[in-house]
Length: 454
Image (cartoon, rainbow, N blue to C red; front, side):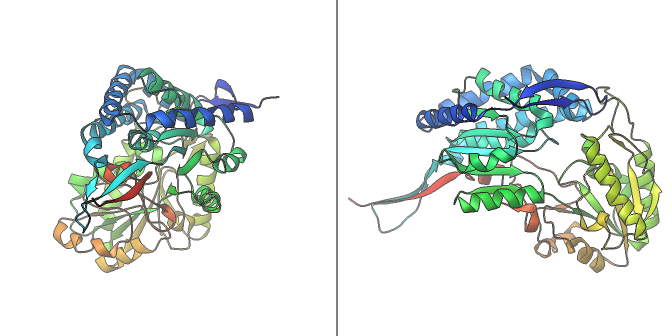
Protein backbone atom coordinates (compact mmCIF):
# COMPACT_ATOMS: atom_id res chain seq x y z
CA UNK A 1 0.00 0.00 0.00
CA UNK A 2 1.38 3.37 -1.02
CA UNK A 3 2.07 6.00 1.65
CA UNK A 4 0.15 9.26 1.43
CA UNK A 5 0.85 12.63 3.02
CA UNK A 6 -0.83 16.03 3.18
CA UNK A 7 0.31 19.61 2.77
CA UNK A 8 -1.18 22.39 4.88
CA UNK A 9 -1.52 26.16 4.61
CA UNK A 10 0.48 27.42 7.62
CA UNK A 11 -1.51 30.65 7.90
CA UNK A 12 -5.03 29.17 7.80
CA UNK A 13 -4.16 25.69 9.09
CA UNK A 14 -6.28 24.16 6.33
CA UNK A 15 -5.24 21.09 4.36
CA UNK A 16 -4.14 21.85 0.80
CA UNK A 17 -3.42 18.62 -1.08
CA UNK A 18 -2.85 14.91 -0.58
CA UNK A 19 0.14 13.30 -2.30
CA UNK A 20 1.46 9.76 -2.64
CA UNK A 21 5.09 8.83 -2.04
CA UNK A 22 6.91 7.21 -4.95
CA UNK A 23 7.23 3.45 -4.68
CA UNK A 24 10.56 1.67 -5.19
CA UNK A 25 9.52 0.89 -8.75
CA UNK A 26 8.60 4.56 -9.32
CA UNK A 27 12.04 5.64 -8.15
CA UNK A 28 13.75 2.98 -10.26
CA UNK A 29 11.86 4.20 -13.31
CA UNK A 30 12.93 7.81 -12.68
CA UNK A 31 16.56 6.83 -12.14
CA UNK A 32 16.56 4.82 -15.37
CA UNK A 33 15.01 7.74 -17.25
CA UNK A 34 17.64 10.10 -15.85
CA UNK A 35 20.40 7.74 -16.98
CA UNK A 36 18.96 7.43 -20.49
CA UNK A 37 18.35 11.16 -20.82
CA UNK A 38 21.88 12.02 -19.67
CA UNK A 39 23.47 9.99 -22.47
CA UNK A 40 21.88 12.36 -25.01
CA UNK A 41 21.70 15.58 -22.96
CA UNK A 42 25.45 15.61 -22.29
CA UNK A 43 26.02 15.82 -26.06
CA UNK A 44 23.49 18.60 -26.65
CA UNK A 45 25.10 21.78 -27.96
CA UNK A 46 25.45 24.56 -25.41
CA UNK A 47 23.58 26.90 -27.78
CA UNK A 48 20.57 24.60 -27.63
CA UNK A 49 20.71 24.37 -23.83
CA UNK A 50 20.82 28.17 -23.64
CA UNK A 51 17.75 28.43 -25.88
CA UNK A 52 15.91 26.13 -23.50
CA UNK A 53 16.98 28.38 -20.62
CA UNK A 54 15.35 31.29 -22.45
CA UNK A 55 12.19 29.23 -22.88
CA UNK A 56 12.24 28.49 -19.15
CA UNK A 57 12.64 32.16 -18.21
CA UNK A 58 9.67 32.99 -20.46
CA UNK A 59 7.59 30.19 -18.95
CA UNK A 60 8.30 31.36 -15.40
CA UNK A 61 7.51 34.97 -16.28
CA UNK A 62 4.23 33.93 -17.89
CA UNK A 63 3.18 32.05 -14.74
CA UNK A 64 4.67 34.43 -12.17
CA UNK A 65 1.38 35.17 -10.40
CA UNK A 66 0.41 31.51 -10.03
CA UNK A 67 3.87 30.49 -8.87
CA UNK A 68 4.08 33.30 -6.31
CA UNK A 69 0.70 32.39 -4.86
CA UNK A 70 1.74 28.74 -4.62
CA UNK A 71 4.82 29.64 -2.55
CA UNK A 72 2.75 31.80 -0.21
CA UNK A 73 0.01 29.22 0.18
CA UNK A 74 2.38 26.35 0.95
CA UNK A 75 4.91 28.02 3.27
CA UNK A 76 3.35 31.33 4.33
CA UNK A 77 5.72 33.89 2.83
CA UNK A 78 4.21 37.37 2.16
CA UNK A 79 3.12 37.52 -1.47
CA UNK A 80 5.43 40.43 -2.26
CA UNK A 81 8.41 38.34 -1.14
CA UNK A 82 7.19 35.30 -3.08
CA UNK A 83 6.97 37.42 -6.21
CA UNK A 84 10.48 38.75 -5.60
CA UNK A 85 11.72 35.16 -5.26
CA UNK A 86 10.26 34.22 -8.65
CA UNK A 87 11.73 37.34 -10.25
CA UNK A 88 15.14 36.48 -8.80
CA UNK A 89 14.93 33.05 -10.42
CA UNK A 90 14.45 34.76 -13.79
CA UNK A 91 17.50 36.97 -13.14
CA UNK A 92 19.49 33.83 -12.32
CA UNK A 93 18.51 32.21 -15.61
CA UNK A 94 19.34 35.40 -17.51
CA UNK A 95 22.81 35.40 -15.94
CA UNK A 96 23.58 31.89 -17.16
CA UNK A 97 22.08 32.58 -20.58
CA UNK A 98 24.73 35.26 -20.99
CA UNK A 99 27.66 33.47 -19.32
CA UNK A 100 27.22 29.69 -19.59
CA UNK A 101 29.06 29.29 -22.89
CA UNK A 102 32.08 31.19 -21.58
CA UNK A 103 32.11 29.34 -18.25
CA UNK A 104 32.15 25.92 -19.94
CA UNK A 105 34.79 26.65 -22.55
CA UNK A 106 38.02 24.67 -22.39
CA UNK A 107 40.81 26.40 -20.46
CA UNK A 108 43.96 26.34 -22.61
CA UNK A 109 47.13 25.75 -20.60
CA UNK A 110 50.57 26.27 -22.14
CA UNK A 111 52.84 23.25 -21.56
CA UNK A 112 55.40 21.28 -23.58
CA UNK A 113 52.51 19.53 -25.35
CA UNK A 114 51.28 20.41 -28.81
CA UNK A 115 48.02 21.23 -27.07
CA UNK A 116 46.91 20.96 -23.43
CA UNK A 117 43.78 22.17 -21.76
CA UNK A 118 41.15 21.57 -19.08
CA UNK A 119 37.83 20.21 -20.35
CA UNK A 120 34.66 20.50 -18.25
CA UNK A 121 32.52 17.38 -18.63
CA UNK A 122 29.22 16.77 -16.79
CA UNK A 123 29.18 14.04 -14.15
CA UNK A 124 25.70 12.61 -14.73
CA UNK A 125 22.64 12.56 -12.50
CA UNK A 126 22.91 14.91 -9.51
CA UNK A 127 20.59 14.56 -6.52
CA UNK A 128 19.35 17.78 -4.88
CA UNK A 129 17.84 17.78 -1.38
CA UNK A 130 16.23 21.16 -0.84
CA UNK A 131 14.41 23.05 1.97
CA UNK A 132 11.11 24.88 2.10
CA UNK A 133 12.10 28.45 3.00
CA UNK A 134 12.93 29.56 -0.56
CA UNK A 135 11.21 26.72 -2.44
CA UNK A 136 11.97 28.04 -5.95
CA UNK A 137 15.18 30.04 -5.52
CA UNK A 138 17.18 27.35 -3.75
CA UNK A 139 16.16 24.74 -6.31
CA UNK A 140 16.92 26.98 -9.28
CA UNK A 141 20.31 28.15 -8.01
CA UNK A 142 21.29 24.47 -7.97
CA UNK A 143 19.44 23.31 -11.08
CA UNK A 144 20.17 26.01 -13.65
CA UNK A 145 23.99 25.84 -13.64
CA UNK A 146 23.99 22.08 -13.00
CA UNK A 147 21.66 21.16 -15.87
CA UNK A 148 23.17 23.74 -18.22
CA UNK A 149 26.58 22.14 -17.63
CA UNK A 150 25.14 18.94 -19.16
CA UNK A 151 24.05 17.06 -16.05
CA UNK A 152 20.55 15.85 -15.27
CA UNK A 153 18.93 16.49 -11.90
CA UNK A 154 16.64 14.74 -9.44
CA UNK A 155 14.98 16.87 -6.75
CA UNK A 156 13.91 15.65 -3.33
CA UNK A 157 12.14 18.72 -1.92
CA UNK A 158 10.72 19.42 1.54
CA UNK A 159 7.32 17.74 1.80
CA UNK A 160 5.46 20.91 2.87
CA UNK A 161 6.24 22.51 -0.52
CA UNK A 162 5.44 19.49 -2.68
CA UNK A 163 3.25 21.59 -4.97
CA UNK A 164 6.25 23.80 -5.72
CA UNK A 165 8.45 20.74 -6.30
CA UNK A 166 6.08 19.23 -8.86
CA UNK A 167 5.43 22.45 -10.74
CA UNK A 168 9.17 23.08 -11.10
CA UNK A 169 9.48 19.80 -13.00
CA UNK A 170 6.49 20.82 -15.09
CA UNK A 171 8.14 24.15 -15.93
CA UNK A 172 11.22 22.37 -17.28
CA UNK A 173 9.12 20.02 -19.41
CA UNK A 174 6.89 22.81 -20.73
CA UNK A 175 10.02 24.75 -21.72
CA UNK A 176 11.19 21.93 -23.96
CA UNK A 177 13.79 20.25 -21.76
CA UNK A 178 13.91 16.49 -22.41
CA UNK A 179 11.90 14.36 -19.99
CA UNK A 180 14.30 13.08 -17.39
CA UNK A 181 16.48 16.18 -17.53
CA UNK A 182 14.89 17.48 -14.33
CA UNK A 183 12.69 15.23 -12.21
CA UNK A 184 11.01 15.56 -8.83
CA UNK A 185 10.76 12.53 -6.58
CA UNK A 186 8.44 12.14 -3.60
CA UNK A 187 10.20 10.08 -0.98
CA UNK A 188 11.00 10.16 2.72
CA UNK A 189 14.37 10.53 4.40
CA UNK A 190 14.70 6.76 4.82
CA UNK A 191 14.80 6.38 1.06
CA UNK A 192 17.59 8.92 0.53
CA UNK A 193 20.45 6.61 1.55
CA UNK A 194 19.28 3.87 -0.79
CA UNK A 195 18.95 6.44 -3.56
CA UNK A 196 22.47 7.79 -3.00
CA UNK A 197 23.91 4.28 -3.11
CA UNK A 198 22.54 3.79 -6.61
CA UNK A 199 25.17 4.06 -9.36
CA UNK A 200 22.97 6.45 -11.31
CA UNK A 201 23.45 9.18 -8.69
CA UNK A 202 26.90 10.72 -9.18
CA UNK A 203 26.82 13.55 -6.61
CA UNK A 204 24.51 15.30 -4.16
CA UNK A 205 23.72 18.91 -3.25
CA UNK A 206 22.00 19.64 0.05
CA UNK A 207 20.65 22.87 1.46
CA UNK A 208 19.46 22.18 4.99
CA UNK A 209 20.32 21.80 8.64
CA UNK A 210 23.62 20.89 10.28
CA UNK A 211 22.22 17.46 11.22
CA UNK A 212 21.03 16.77 7.68
CA UNK A 213 24.42 17.86 6.34
CA UNK A 214 26.27 15.45 8.63
CA UNK A 215 24.08 12.57 7.52
CA UNK A 216 24.34 13.34 3.81
CA UNK A 217 28.12 13.87 4.03
CA UNK A 218 28.43 10.50 5.78
CA UNK A 219 26.44 8.68 3.09
CA UNK A 220 28.24 10.50 0.26
CA UNK A 221 31.63 9.76 1.80
CA UNK A 222 30.80 6.09 2.27
CA UNK A 223 29.89 5.90 -1.42
CA UNK A 224 32.77 8.13 -2.59
CA UNK A 225 30.45 10.64 -4.19
CA UNK A 226 31.01 14.43 -4.28
CA UNK A 227 28.74 16.55 -2.13
CA UNK A 228 27.95 20.24 -1.78
CA UNK A 229 26.49 21.36 1.55
CA UNK A 230 24.83 24.70 2.24
CA UNK A 231 23.84 24.47 5.89
CA UNK A 232 22.72 26.70 8.72
CA UNK A 233 24.00 30.09 9.75
CA UNK A 234 24.21 32.37 12.75
CA UNK A 235 25.31 35.54 10.96
CA UNK A 236 26.65 38.45 12.94
CA UNK A 237 25.64 42.02 12.13
CA UNK A 238 28.24 44.40 13.57
CA UNK A 239 27.10 47.97 14.27
CA UNK A 240 30.07 50.27 14.84
CA UNK A 241 29.81 53.67 16.55
CA UNK A 242 30.05 55.58 13.24
CA UNK A 243 27.25 53.57 11.56
CA UNK A 244 24.64 55.72 9.79
CA UNK A 245 21.52 54.25 11.40
CA UNK A 246 19.13 56.63 9.64
CA UNK A 247 20.47 55.50 6.27
CA UNK A 248 20.76 51.75 6.93
CA UNK A 249 18.18 50.79 9.56
CA UNK A 250 15.66 49.55 6.98
CA UNK A 251 18.31 47.18 5.59
CA UNK A 252 19.38 46.09 9.08
CA UNK A 253 15.81 45.19 10.09
CA UNK A 254 15.17 43.47 6.76
CA UNK A 255 18.33 41.42 7.30
CA UNK A 256 16.62 39.79 10.28
CA UNK A 257 12.89 39.91 9.50
CA UNK A 258 12.75 39.05 5.79
CA UNK A 259 10.87 35.79 5.16
CA UNK A 260 9.70 36.03 8.79
CA UNK A 261 13.29 35.43 9.83
CA UNK A 262 13.44 32.02 8.14
CA UNK A 263 16.73 32.36 6.31
CA UNK A 264 20.12 30.77 6.86
CA UNK A 265 21.90 34.02 5.93
CA UNK A 266 19.72 36.30 8.07
CA UNK A 267 21.36 38.57 10.64
CA UNK A 268 20.81 36.71 13.90
CA UNK A 269 23.30 38.30 16.29
CA UNK A 270 23.42 42.10 16.34
CA UNK A 271 26.71 43.17 17.91
CA UNK A 272 26.50 46.85 18.80
CA UNK A 273 29.23 49.05 20.32
CA UNK A 274 28.18 50.81 23.53
CA UNK A 275 28.30 54.37 22.13
CA UNK A 276 25.46 53.69 19.70
CA UNK A 277 23.67 50.88 21.55
CA UNK A 278 20.72 52.81 23.06
CA UNK A 279 20.01 54.67 19.82
CA UNK A 280 20.18 51.39 17.90
CA UNK A 281 17.67 49.67 20.20
CA UNK A 282 15.25 52.58 19.95
CA UNK A 283 15.38 52.76 16.16
CA UNK A 284 15.28 48.99 15.72
CA UNK A 285 12.10 48.73 17.80
CA UNK A 286 10.52 51.62 15.89
CA UNK A 287 11.12 49.88 12.55
CA UNK A 288 9.86 46.54 13.84
CA UNK A 289 6.67 48.20 15.08
CA UNK A 290 6.02 49.34 11.49
CA UNK A 291 5.94 45.74 10.21
CA UNK A 292 2.41 44.68 9.27
CA UNK A 293 1.36 41.16 10.20
CA UNK A 294 -1.55 39.68 8.27
CA UNK A 295 -2.72 37.31 5.58
CA UNK A 296 0.37 36.60 3.46
CA UNK A 297 -1.73 36.86 0.29
CA UNK A 298 -2.46 40.53 1.08
CA UNK A 299 -0.16 42.91 -0.76
CA UNK A 300 0.43 45.16 2.26
CA UNK A 301 1.49 42.30 4.57
CA UNK A 302 5.19 42.52 5.46
CA UNK A 303 5.35 39.90 8.23
CA UNK A 304 3.56 36.59 8.28
CA UNK A 305 3.52 33.21 9.99
CA UNK A 306 6.25 30.60 10.19
CA UNK A 307 6.06 27.68 7.81
CA UNK A 308 5.14 25.08 10.44
CA UNK A 309 3.99 25.11 14.05
CA UNK A 310 6.91 22.97 15.25
CA UNK A 311 9.26 25.71 14.04
CA UNK A 312 7.54 28.20 16.33
CA UNK A 313 7.78 25.73 19.20
CA UNK A 314 11.52 25.28 18.66
CA UNK A 315 12.00 29.03 18.57
CA UNK A 316 10.11 29.43 21.85
CA UNK A 317 12.35 26.85 23.51
CA UNK A 318 15.46 28.72 22.39
CA UNK A 319 14.09 32.02 23.68
CA UNK A 320 12.95 30.55 27.00
CA UNK A 321 16.31 28.86 27.57
CA UNK A 322 18.00 32.22 27.03
CA UNK A 323 15.60 33.99 29.39
CA UNK A 324 16.35 31.38 32.05
CA UNK A 325 20.04 32.33 31.71
CA UNK A 326 19.33 36.07 32.10
CA UNK A 327 18.30 37.40 28.68
CA UNK A 328 15.74 40.24 28.67
CA UNK A 329 12.81 40.66 26.28
CA UNK A 330 12.52 44.31 25.24
CA UNK A 331 9.92 43.74 22.52
CA UNK A 332 7.55 40.99 21.39
CA UNK A 333 7.70 37.27 22.21
CA UNK A 334 4.00 36.51 21.75
CA UNK A 335 3.17 33.23 19.98
CA UNK A 336 0.02 31.61 18.61
CA UNK A 337 0.29 28.43 16.53
CA UNK A 338 2.50 29.35 13.53
CA UNK A 339 2.55 33.05 14.43
CA UNK A 340 5.63 34.30 16.26
CA UNK A 341 5.77 38.01 17.02
CA UNK A 342 9.02 39.76 16.05
CA UNK A 343 11.09 39.64 19.22
CA UNK A 344 14.04 41.68 20.42
CA UNK A 345 16.24 40.24 23.18
CA UNK A 346 19.06 41.90 25.12
CA UNK A 347 21.47 41.05 27.93
CA UNK A 348 22.90 38.24 25.82
CA UNK A 349 25.77 35.96 26.81
CA UNK A 350 27.61 33.39 24.71
CA UNK A 351 26.14 30.33 26.45
CA UNK A 352 22.58 31.26 25.48
CA UNK A 353 20.75 29.48 22.66
CA UNK A 354 19.99 32.77 20.90
CA UNK A 355 23.73 33.42 20.67
CA UNK A 356 25.22 30.02 19.87
CA UNK A 357 22.41 28.32 17.88
CA UNK A 358 20.66 29.15 14.64
CA UNK A 359 17.31 30.80 15.36
CA UNK A 360 15.01 30.27 12.40
CA UNK A 361 12.44 32.98 12.94
CA UNK A 362 12.00 36.70 13.77
CA UNK A 363 14.26 36.77 16.84
CA UNK A 364 16.88 39.51 17.12
CA UNK A 365 19.56 39.05 19.78
CA UNK A 366 21.21 42.40 20.58
CA UNK A 367 24.66 42.20 22.15
CA UNK A 368 26.40 45.26 23.64
CA UNK A 369 30.19 45.39 23.31
CA UNK A 370 32.75 47.91 24.55
CA UNK A 371 34.87 48.33 21.43
CA UNK A 372 35.34 47.59 17.76
CA UNK A 373 37.88 44.90 18.63
CA UNK A 374 35.40 43.18 20.91
CA UNK A 375 32.74 43.42 18.21
CA UNK A 376 34.85 41.47 15.72
CA UNK A 377 35.90 38.92 18.33
CA UNK A 378 32.28 38.35 19.31
CA UNK A 379 31.23 37.99 15.68
CA UNK A 380 33.86 35.30 15.13
CA UNK A 381 32.77 33.40 18.23
CA UNK A 382 30.57 30.97 16.35
CA UNK A 383 30.73 27.44 14.99
CA UNK A 384 28.85 28.72 11.91
CA UNK A 385 30.47 30.47 8.96
CA UNK A 386 28.00 31.69 6.36
CA UNK A 387 28.42 35.46 6.51
CA UNK A 388 29.14 38.60 8.49
CA UNK A 389 27.90 42.13 7.87
CA UNK A 390 29.35 45.38 9.20
CA UNK A 391 27.73 48.80 9.25
CA UNK A 392 30.14 51.69 9.48
CA UNK A 393 31.00 55.01 7.82
CA UNK A 394 34.62 53.91 7.50
CA UNK A 395 34.34 51.15 4.91
CA UNK A 396 38.10 51.30 4.27
CA UNK A 397 38.86 50.35 7.86
CA UNK A 398 36.24 47.57 7.70
CA UNK A 399 37.83 46.27 4.50
CA UNK A 400 41.06 45.64 6.38
CA UNK A 401 39.13 43.13 8.52
CA UNK A 402 38.13 40.90 5.58
CA UNK A 403 40.87 38.33 6.18
CA UNK A 404 39.98 38.14 9.89
CA UNK A 405 36.48 36.84 9.13
CA UNK A 406 36.41 33.12 8.33
CA UNK A 407 32.90 33.17 6.85
CA UNK A 408 31.96 32.58 3.24
CA UNK A 409 30.78 36.19 2.87
CA UNK A 410 31.67 39.62 4.27
CA UNK A 411 29.27 42.46 3.52
CA UNK A 412 29.89 46.12 4.42
CA UNK A 413 26.84 48.39 4.74
CA UNK A 414 24.58 45.74 3.21
CA UNK A 415 22.78 42.61 4.35
CA UNK A 416 24.29 39.26 3.39
CA UNK A 417 22.44 38.00 0.33
CA UNK A 418 22.92 35.68 -2.61
CA UNK A 419 23.63 37.07 -6.07
CA UNK A 420 23.89 34.98 -9.27
CA UNK A 421 27.10 36.84 -10.18
CA UNK A 422 28.91 35.93 -6.94
CA UNK A 423 29.78 32.55 -5.38
CA UNK A 424 27.65 31.53 -2.41
CA UNK A 425 28.48 29.15 0.42
CA UNK A 426 29.90 28.82 3.91
CA UNK A 427 32.70 27.52 6.11
CA UNK A 428 32.91 25.59 9.38
CA UNK A 429 29.59 23.83 10.13
CA UNK A 430 27.79 26.03 7.59
CA UNK A 431 28.98 23.61 4.91
CA UNK A 432 31.34 23.49 1.97
CA UNK A 433 31.33 24.05 -1.77
CA UNK A 434 30.00 27.03 -3.69
CA UNK A 435 26.86 27.72 -5.66
CA UNK A 436 26.18 30.46 -8.22
CA UNK A 437 28.64 32.37 -10.43
CA UNK A 438 31.18 30.32 -12.40
CA UNK A 439 31.93 28.21 -9.32
CA UNK A 440 28.32 27.01 -9.23
CA UNK A 441 28.45 25.95 -12.86
CA UNK A 442 31.62 23.95 -12.26
CA UNK A 443 30.44 22.39 -8.99
CA UNK A 444 29.41 19.12 -10.65
CA UNK A 445 31.73 18.68 -13.60
CA UNK A 446 34.79 16.54 -14.25
CA UNK A 447 37.71 18.96 -14.64
CA UNK A 448 39.51 16.80 -17.15
CA UNK A 449 43.15 17.32 -18.07
CA UNK A 450 43.76 16.85 -21.81
CA UNK A 451 47.33 16.54 -23.13
CA UNK A 452 47.98 16.15 -26.89
CA UNK A 453 51.24 15.62 -28.74
CA UNK A 454 51.59 15.23 -32.48
